[in-house]
Amino acid sequence: MKITFVLPTLCLTGGIRVISIFAELLKQRGHSVFVISVPHEQASLRQQVKSLLRGRGWISTPENEPSFFDNLSVESKIIDRSRPIEDKDVPDADVVVATWWETAEWVAKLSPSKGAKAYFIQHHEVFDYLPEGRVEATWMLPMHKITISDWLVELARTKYGDRQVSSAPPSVDTKQFYACPRHKQSVPTIGMMYSAIYWKGTDIALKAFSLAAEKIPNLRLVAFGTEAPSPELPLPANAEYVIRPDQDKLKDYYSKCDAWLLASRSEGFGLPIIEAMACRTPVISTTAGAAPEILSGGTGILVSPEDPEEMAKAIESMCHLSNAQWQAMSEAAYAKVTNYSWKDATEHFEAGLKVAVEKSQQREVNIVSCSPYYVRGPLPCAVPTGAGKS
Image 1 (cartoon, helix red, strand yellow):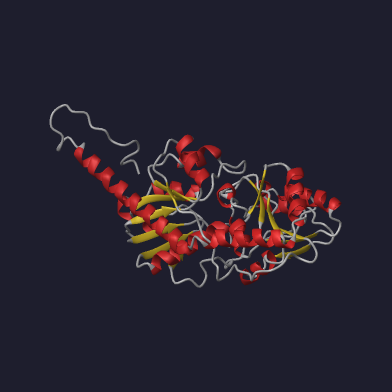
Image 2 (cartoon, one colour):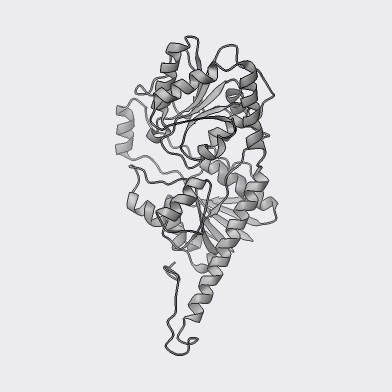
């Protein structure tokens, strides 16, 4: 197949990582893959002032910000300026894939020659800083949806009435994320990813760590993130923190911990869960994203959202495990994530693309059969909602 991915700006987020891996592996499977994206938009004067008032400094917009598409063999193009992607920007293809709510709006307007339309959804992006109505409307567009976790499949069914969603959960690169079997740390150590984004729950994780540290005085925190800690979310004085660590160093931070915290209020999937587990680190997570699917069978501990006290008790429980008990959980976590590969994930994604093509062809058949030149007599013709409007 000829496959086009339509992306927003390229960067080092987890969602972009997942798309880059699918794109590369689809090419390795013999498909022709093209990626198109928009450049980073310059911050407005209002955004600059707000950043300065919050003590975060001047927002710079590097022209060549690194991304997970750097050094891949997949053909990619960044258009001339920040604007909607149009027919003139993309080649004719078998399938064109939207990867974010705004790109879904663009893809919906592309000509049929640009390919059957698919929508790769990695989160329910209904956040207070986005136009909620427009985001929700993209779920109703006549595009086949491919998503990454059971809760998103269920959401499509219950909220948006779509019962034909494909599922392609991501895997983890065990050449990048790995660790040898090990003992518990000599100093109890907890890890987390730091982010000022509200729904990431950094405030909950830090509160939980603080409560646990009252019971475990030598408890240590290891963290990494993409930004300097803000005054509103200060790290403990003895925390080890690194900003934008090299990708090949991430495994070192995961593997020096007895447990990894994911305190998110909302997640599409939660990639740090499987990255930590591939490094033989058990996870303590809220029920956000794919955590309920992954943290079963003794691979970690699930806690309620918005409950730092429960998370603190889970930290204490993890730290009080015997070395043998902790090793058993560590090995169970490792076995769980290494039993499902990126090859498996790509096969699921490829199958979803084929469904998108089949649906598109069926819509074309229905439209043709409903033409007054083909319908005889007064028989009604059922055309799927939205068919032919894109």
